Length: 216
Image (cartoon, rainbow, N blue to C red):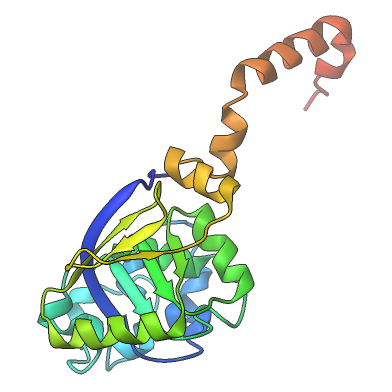
């Protein structure tokens, strides 16, 4: 997983409350057995005018010119600001996969759905909870200033605005540790690879019958 330390990026606004995970990545795309390739289908039903199915070439689709992520000023955005209860609905982990694979590194909202909130951390995306008044001000500033960028400093736990104002945010220490070091659940386990190998070697040496393989 890519580590998150300091990130500066263009901001895109998702000016809707209660954006659920089926809107983030519609159910038909959950058929894939892979963990990659979801970025082109992020917000698929809002992003395109035609119905999407897995395996379609995005170049053959009909983009919705009114959707925020299709507007030229937000191309390349890597920070998404949203309204309350972002990521509600089903617990599909494909939602943070799609956001991360589109290019988003951080999400800012007054609140997130609990399971989605947990899943974002495990996939290298930082969800930041700020007071509703601060988020509303960010929406106003993004609308007023094309090319609006924010800097997210995870080590210091602040969002830095273009004028230098810092907006502090909370993050649980263990989640912060994992993001700063790029550790997902597998990465956390692999920190102990030497101990695991030593345990397996000792187990086979003392209990060789456990290594017995049944004939095929």
